[in-house]
Structure formats: structure tokens, C-alpha cells
Length: 304
Image (cartoon, rainbow, N blue to C red; front, side):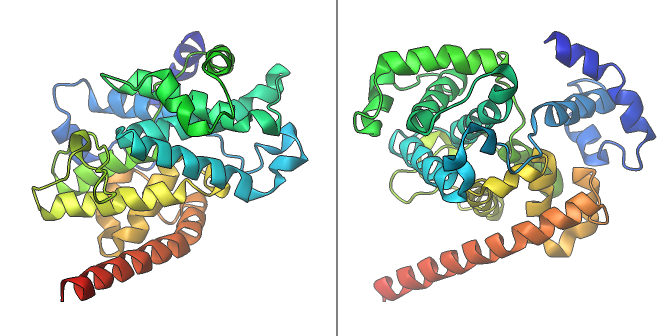
């Protein structure tokens, strides 16, 4: 907390000096929360503070982590656990953030995570995120059951102390999903509640229930969130800040609204980091869209 306060002293001044101010839509939408520039500066500062910006952050832990598949396999397993437990989507994204930030920060503290403890770390990240975000989180024993005896509840409790120490109790972070949520609201001028999962169709919807509203905005946000889910499976996503990554997804999904997206994100596609992130994200989005089209056509054939 003390580090956060020190770093945030000059943040408003730096943002005021930048070419892009806080979005005008943000000022109107969050009127009454506080001065728009200060609220926006806090959000941006949390992004600076917690983004890793290094796609090779796992390598100090050993040669076993050199292959991207190692992280992708664990993150996909974490997603499955969250889906099976009907947890809110934010929990999955928070858990992945905790997992990656521990791997990024631990070596500087003289701590390394052997490959045999990697799933234990992922399990612990889910446990902490669920306690932080859920009103009624699942019991630890329920989460441990998904590990097929790879770890015990006592080991998770011990690892929890390590995680909290490494993260310095900084658990309230702005993930790419949080940024995408804000950007989407500002772009569409609508409000959405937090999103969970539907065990029936695999869509992540409010309170873990099937979304029956059928509105265009709801469907668009679910599609957008699905893209963000796939993007964070790739270890290279950590090369960019969470805000930049979410902005790149917005630019790639809503290509026709680039002027508005620049307004709501405060990031221009002319910036090298944003343009590079868009180029990296675009093939992933194309793959997701093809997959969704195949699923839709398959449903149509079954109905016929």
C-alpha cells in the first residue's frame, strides 16, 4: 500500500501531460464516484503497477518452463475448474493474474517454483481469488479434488502464505477482463454486472445463470469476453500491459469503431505497443471467430 501511494503521487500530472485525457464517456458515466481524472489515474496506475510486461517471466524458475505449453495447460485447467464450480469469470482472470505475478516476482525475493509445485500454485491462486471475489466461495477441499491428489489442502494453505507474501497482499488488480468490461461499457453506453459461467452452454453470464435477456450488447460482451479468455492462455500476452491487451482486443473486434475505441481506451493504435499488440491478438481473434461460426453452423444442422 505504501508503495502504491508513493508511485501515485505524480500520476495525475503525468496523465494530464499526455496526449489522451480520461475518456469523456468515462467522465459522464462515473459522475459522482470522484473526479474523473483521479479515478482514471488510479485505474491506469494499478495497470502500471501490476502488469508484468515480460513474456519470459517464467524462465528464472527452470528450463521446464521454457515451453509455452506448460503455462497454457495449467491455465486451461484453471479455467475448467472455475467452470465446473460455476465461479464468476473474474475469478478465473484474477487467479491467472496471481499465478503469473507470483512467477514474475518470486525470483527477486529468492523464491523459485519447481515444476512439481506449479499446479499447486494454480490451485492456490483459484482458492485466493474465489475467497476474494465470491460471496460464497467453494471449500478448499472441493477445489483440491480437481487436482487428482496432486496436492493436499494443507499444502494449499502453506502456498497461500507464500503467494500473499510475494504479492504483498495486492489482490485488487485490473485484469484484461476488467479493462475490456470498462471499455465495452463506455463504447456502448450500457452497464453490465460481473459475469460468471453457465454450466449448460459454456457461456459466462451473470450469477452463473444462463443469460436469457437476448440483447445485442449482452451477446457482444460474451463474445468479447470469450476472446479475452483465449488471449490470456498464451504466455506472450504478458508482454503487454493489461490495459493495452484489452484495447488491442477492442480494436480487433470492433474494427469499424476505431475512433471511438481510441476515445474510450485512451490508447491510440498509432502507438507502437498498441499496434504490435493488435497484430499479435488479431490471428487469435480470427481463430475464435471461426470456432464460433463452426459451432453455430453445427447447431443449425442439428436443429434442421
